[in-house]
Image (cartoon, rainbow, N blue to C red; front, side):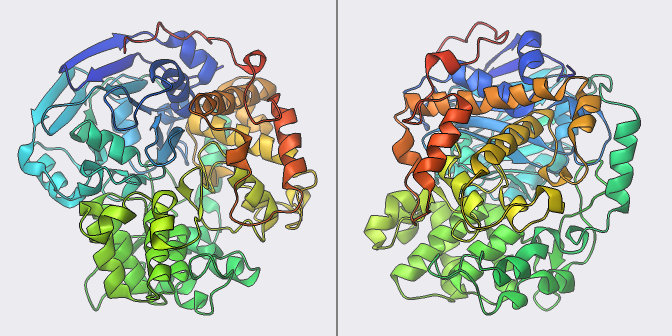
Length: 564
């Protein structure tokens, strides 16, 4: 099996020390990216760790596909213990950093400990430099990039936390390539708790291409020639359709469609998009650089999820207002889904839907934990009672769009996902709109037979996050192409995904999560109990949603765990 190449670099920001570990055997068992991060986190983060404590760790990792120049490979993974869900979480970001990370010669970088002063960490193939940066306290993404530009470093070398990360906002993101985010799960707050303002990566030690051949060229050609509507409007291209079938959360999840969806959907994006945007080496070019000519506001996005969270869910029909919310989140370093949903909860509690001025004020207050923003920075699960609103979260994570009350398989996915209410963990919505070929489509209603498809989708997405491959490659990928790219039988590759999902679940079990956390949707889903039984049975887990010792993967060539 083809896998990532290079040692693990451990960076202890408290001790200002580094160490390298050979993890070839682990890479062979887990490919790279999320797989390697999950295996290492499972072994090295204590099960009773405080997400904000020095014992928590962050793992940045690439996969073997980053050695190619194939489309859909401009991404990488970050894994750690989430302060939002209190469980293990991997987040995934696009942009251009992955190739600069690869150039350091490492397959994974582990961030441990906590610094006694605000610090930046420069990782190169010649060593690691720690830079004290007290003057960057509270700096935005743009302000931090201005500082790094003085060293000749561009946005494509960087992983940055904004004020939200420094202030431990539980849904703080890690920003890279200026506007791309390791968004879900609050890993930016973990980096902030370690008192690390930024990481940079550069070098000239990238491994030789491991993934080559005809399939690479075919996929790149198909990406270039694709007529997908995502090339014009990105993920926002699904807005009007989701609205028409009743899957667009609206008015803090109290409704399923928005009468002004057309004002904030595809047409609005196309009207404001002023150039093409993409990730490293990708010909699909689905990103959304947008500009409002009247105000001069520029941002990248908003994507569909942001159109939901700051648009329909907040009853905002002004696309420029949503652009501004998106840009504020990028500059302050916050996940737009969680932030927008939390703001919508506040609007619901105060009968203030549609108040754009209030929304933008709240976004800033959350990042700096000022006034009501201090409460909202804790996330919906921790502030719903104080606000007097329903708790629209799963395992502590705010809901993404693609509503499970209409797309019932997606509802099941939200329920069992180890990451919480995240749409990308399995992407069951693709089969239920559907956005796939008719032979793969599923009825939206009911859960019969969907547990098996969900297991397959979770496993394949775990593989994608390890390889590392963009989820939007689904039209280009099949079993034969996976086998050709990674030189392995597909059953062997599926087993990698199963090991990852099982390790995530086992870690979370040790922190007290079980079936009760899966059976906690804020709405009724007929047949959920039977579907949970079927899902656990397919996974080889116990009926209470826990992983028995017999289902745990073996060590898989893991190195000796680091000292705590």
